[in-house]
Image 1 (cartoon, rainbow, N blue to C red):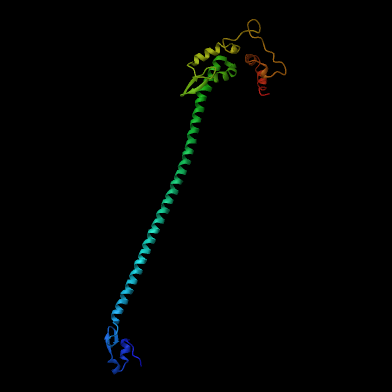
Image 2 (cartoon, rainbow, N blue to C red):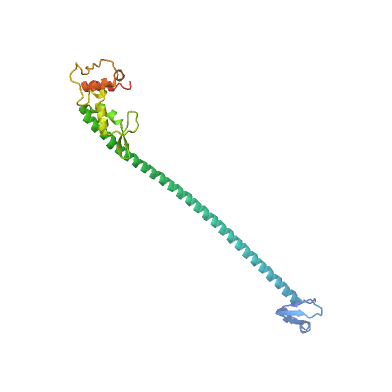
Length: 240
């Protein structure tokens, strides 16, 4: 029977006494007592060292891989966070721009509304007041001409000249100008000619088929004074 070089304790106990004499105790088992036999313990220790080194290398590699993965995850998370922040900023900027646009429209609307009220107060009302003062019931005829000479500037009524340029004239100056304008003499209170003969303006006969363009401004004014209904009919032909 061939002898085993290394035996466990159980295997050693199963041997007869003559065979047991060939073995010596080694660690937890028994080893064949042979001169020149290899250093099994040394080989085993070396093997254990190699196994430990291998285990250590595996642990180090796993730790390095784990660390690399953690760093990679952190880098990805940072990039994702930056992307989210960038997205949030873009959203905030877009939202802010939309709010700004809405606010600008609101302010422009308020400014337009204010300008409209100022125009009504400082142009329309002023023109109506002066037209009524100058022409009484015939104010509607002269009012557009007065209104065209007014504008709002710095919250005040400003007089412009006949060419539409700002002037230093006052409302009193404008009133005098209209009172002295012969074109409006037929309707301006205090300047109206009396009668239909002499120095007064002759009565206008509209005639059938005549249009707005067939009359001068002075004739239209006189027609408004003498025959308001005919004036309205004539006025309706402006675009014909």
